[in-house]
Structure formats: C-alpha cells, structure tokens
Image (cartoon, rainbow over all chains, first blue to last red; front, side, top):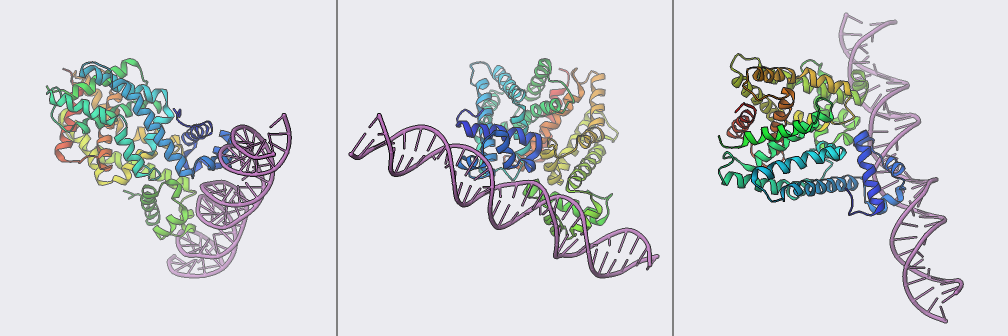
Length: 193
Length: 193
DNA sequence: GGCACTAGAATGAACGTTCTATCTAATGGA
DNA sequence: TCCATTAGATAGAACGTTCATTCTAGTGCC
C-alpha cells in the first residue's frame, strides 16, 4: 500500500493506520507511533514535519492506492455492463482486503483534520472520474436513465460502502452472492425501463 | 434536538456538537466547551462524568432524534410505495435540517471512542427496525426481489448518505427533483422485474 | 445550616515538538 | 590505504504547553 515511500516512512504510515483504527486520532500519540513502529520520534520528525502531515499523507496514499485498485477493473475491455460490474467488484474487493484503509477514509473524509486540498485531490484523482465517464457514456447511449451521472455514481458508491460497513459492524455477511445481488440492484435501478 | 435534557446539558451538548464538527474531537477541549457554552468546567462535571460521556451522550441523543424524525414518515398510513418514499424523504430532510448531527454520526459511527453498546443500541433502536419491516413486507408480497431486507435497507441508506455527502462537500446540489430521482432509482432497483 | 449548583484556579499527566548527542557511511586528499 | 571531514539519520531526553479532571470557595434557595 505504501510502495512509493522509504522503509521508515512506510513503517510509520502502516503503524499510524493500525493505531488510528484501533484507538482514534486523539489517542494516536507520536510516542505511541514511535514505540510501535520502532522508529524514534527524532527520525519521525526527520521524515515528516508534523503529526498532521502524517495523517494527511496517510489519507493521500490510501486514496491513491484505492484509485489504482479500482481502475484496474474499469480499464478492461468489455461492455458497459461488464465494466460496471468489474468496477464495483473492485471497490468491494479493496475494502475487503484492506478494511483499515477503508475505515480510515470513511471516518476521516468529513474530518477538518484532513486538508481541503487533500480531499479535493482525492475526489478528482481517484477512481471517480473514470467511473463518472462510464456512467455518462451509459446515459449517452440511453442505457441509463437521464440524470446527473456523478450523483448516480455517488449513490452507488454509498450502497457499496454501506454493504461493507454493515459487514464490518457484524450486522451481515459479505458473500459473493450478496455482492452479485448488490451490483444487480444498482444496475437495475440505473437502467431505462 | 436535546429536549429531554436540562438547560445546562443542552447547552453543553449543542456546543460540543458545533465544536466537534468545526475542529475535530482532538481539538474539542473541555476548556473550549466550557467557554463557548458559557458553563464552567465545574458545572460540566456536575452533569457529565467525563468528556467521553458527553460524546457518547451526544451520539445517543442524535441517533434517537433521527430515529423519531424518520419514523414519522414511516408510521403514516399508505401503500408500501408511499411509505418507502416518505421514509427516505425524512432521512434526507433530517440531514438537510441538521447537517452537523448527520456529519457527526457519519464520522463517529466507526470510531472506537463511541462505546460498542451505544452503537448497538443506535442500530437497533433507531429507524432501521421499522424500515427493515417495511422491506420484509414488500418482499413477502413479492413486490421486492428476494434478498436480505436488512442488506437492501443499508444499501439504500448508503445511497442517501452519499447523495447528502456529495452535497455537503459541494460536489452537487440537493434539489427536490434530485431527491425524487434518487428515491425512484432505489425503488426501481428493489422491485421484481 | 444544609444542599444543589457554579465558578474558576490548581494539579499532574500527557502531549507534540525540539534539542543535543551519537552513530553510520560516504568522500577525498595525501 | 589511511584518516579527517561531512552530511544524513537516529535515539531519546528535555521543553513548554495543553489537556482532562479535581479541588476549594462561594452562591442562593429550602
């Protein structure tokens, strides 16, 4: 997840993610990050200018990773219906493989601790743009009902997020059949009658 | 929103909500709550045992309010289709009227700072149960496709949440027409072909 | 006088950050 | 090849601030 960073940065970011999910930002102290990552505070401040920067870097890195992960589903050749399914499957697969990253983004996308510019870049630079394009294409072809494609993408993303949330909170399972059904539900709601 | 509390408690809870949305839990100090609510720390500790309790009480109170608000839409007499629309309209209306409460719940439903029991009670005691019942009824009548009604409710809630999120982040509007369309999309995805 | 409540100073722990010292490895002149 | 020099990296103690909470003193009502 943090391939573009050096060893120390990677250790710090990975540790910070674990702690923040386990204990909240409040309780994620530099001393604890130092202890668990086995990097001294001196070194941490050599690579990061502040705690705020670590958290924002974490946010940026996870969003970038998610973006890449989902795009691998969208970039394949296929019909709109196929790419639709592949894209959302990747969204779910990603949050299943990296639940901490998923939870972190979910929790902090509304947080004032994350800089507005970081959030903006996350929104524009992730998988939203290609997914929006897919939906716009489906509407041009009169396959989807006429509406703001970006809104529909957000709604469908919300559906997937809440399915995963429900699973992570222990309120339901996350089976292949459930995922298939969820994608089918979204598709059916989107198409022109 | 905090009618069941006394004056001081109400002031503290209202102020805490404002600050936490503006500044993060981290930066929401007791001193700041005291200053902005015009209640001394001594008095705050007379009514609340700790900061943690304030936040958890806030969570509980908001969820209870939301639950009542949405149920007013669900309890009316009408067809399944009508009650479906009324329910989701109330969900959206509530988050439009009280965006801070909406944001707070969104941000902290995953947070370890909120006690598991509080989250559990929020899930079971809110509007989820009646909405689940409505969906189960629709499935019994073969109106909705066969699937776990709770999962479908969560998905639809996610759609609404992300529509509102998108609006609050400034990525889209929240018009009556948009809301109508969103509910229509959810309905169409749910019904049997 | 007793009680519920309030104010705000006091307390001690914990915090983010900085500082100093030390270590490591690379460089280059003789 | 040798040592002197340098720069980057690391460790952890130290610093000053801020925090949640407690304490003490006071108020007004019965």
